[in-house]
Image (cartoon, rainbow, N blue to C red; front, side):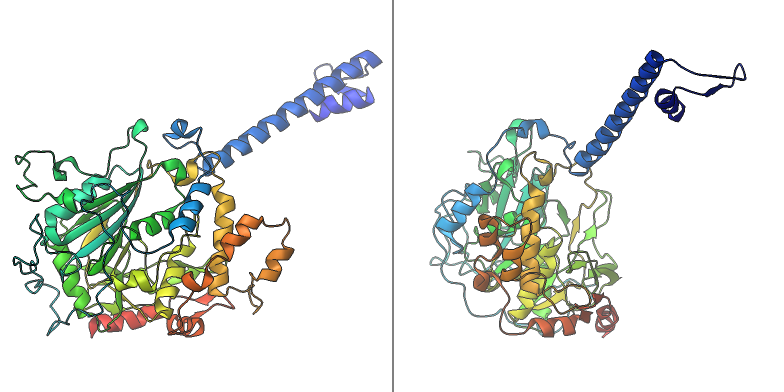
Length: 505
């Protein structure tokens, strides 16, 4: 190329290696060679551009399966914001949730706490005898043989958000098959599935009432499906994990306990009763159990008596200035261990948590900041975080072919996520590295270039009192407890030694 360009520009002298002679070109030949060399440069530049552009598109997940079905669709933000403005967060079950017979708003959450067990269970003996079916009598049992959920001391509400997940129905089926008290188990599913593209429904067919008593999961009065509430959402209107958490929590109906999980898990026998027993062992009136569950490798895996569990005691700072959770595998313990962080893939608590620390509906497409923000919000509201003493559910971590919400063309997830990241920075008081100067303030947002839209500004600062930090403990106390230096962005692992010691004692 350089030789051609030199020849075209200068016309000679040029050296012919074959003849070992110098030669030149006339004007017409020079112009021809110059045109050829310029065309070659344009072709090379075009190839480089399309290679880089294609790589960026693949990074955004545009090449994921099922995209052709989503070529056209509404703006995913507008409808959701209208719903938030219209309804707010009141914990009431709405008639739009299907599979919820006799839908009503729940009564206030009871203020009493479950009694603590007399002694800690050993790690090899799962005593859940104190978590049996609630006593039934003529005044407390409904037509389906269930104690009303707000009167049932072992009622459990499980929130599941599923984005086009083929494991959603098997997860729910396994939950009921292995539960000790299935009539006390209520599930709310945010089903973000595209049936036109072949996505299976989250409601397992064998758990639904089909007008016959031949199904092994049903009796004449009750089917597990009677306890399952489903909100179907067009996947084009999905806005990431926090969207599902918020909608799932709105299906809460007055149950005693609350659990949040992903839509791809498997469970041990009597997992529900064992979690309640474990929760009562935590030495706090406002305890939260949370961690990254162990990995599930297939039906051949023995889920009982797993020797290790994950403790949320370490994290590291990322470029946005807030912490990303890591977790550390340790030997299981006799009782839950105190920890500074929580995970979004599993969380178990008294359902009062939903009223005291409601999920934030203004965190569109947030990913990395979700766990640290909710950890801090819970802790500053007076809730203590604990690692489960053993693994009672197991998680599918490798799902490389699963559809992704950020693969929908035109949803501008990256732009929405930047506003959500700024909201996390605002709540957590994130500063510039090695400085006490906050990254996000109203004045800085007004001076931001390019300017932030008015809609994004409203979302960034919306209802900060309701969805911000608590007042029982301060942010500074939290960072000290977690052994984290947010200014110099150091720490996040020092608590693990304490957690090991707590596990031994």
